[in-house]
Length: 206
Image (cartoon, rainbow, N blue to C red):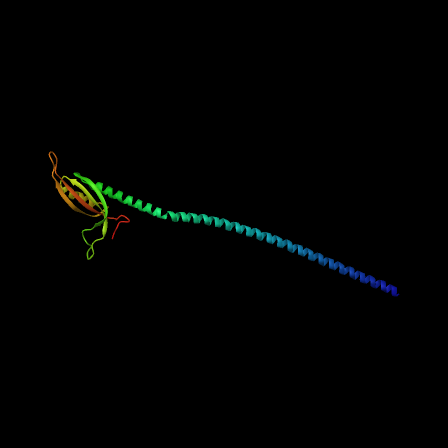
């Protein structure tokens, strides 16, 4: 009777051990599967982040390259700004003097011939502004020398210059009669001062 009980007890213990072993094995397998799954997910996440990080680095490198190119262009533009300013000033000056020469040529009446023209930035207006206590500032202007058959033609030339948009004021600086020789006509030598309406940039206005 005792032997039967011992056999039953051993069988019960063996079945309990086998059940525990199965549960332990299943638990270990589940743990391993979970660990592998977590590791795989982590690896995938790390790979994605590495790819994103590399993409960001590539974009940063590209932006830095573009910035360097922009910096080079900015330096070139800055280096050429004085030249551009000089060219603009020269262009404006050329435009101004082309207009001045055009107006002078249009103002010359018949019977008047020009001998020379000289520009100056130290010509001062003859009249002071109303209420002014200091001499007029120096202005850019022309000294126009020529000859005319009659004084009336010199006056007409001055009137024509006054009506031209390039000039603000004109006056007769000097005139003299040049007697003619044999078979030659006497002429009047003159010099007219004409102040520019728009002073040339860079003119001395002190």
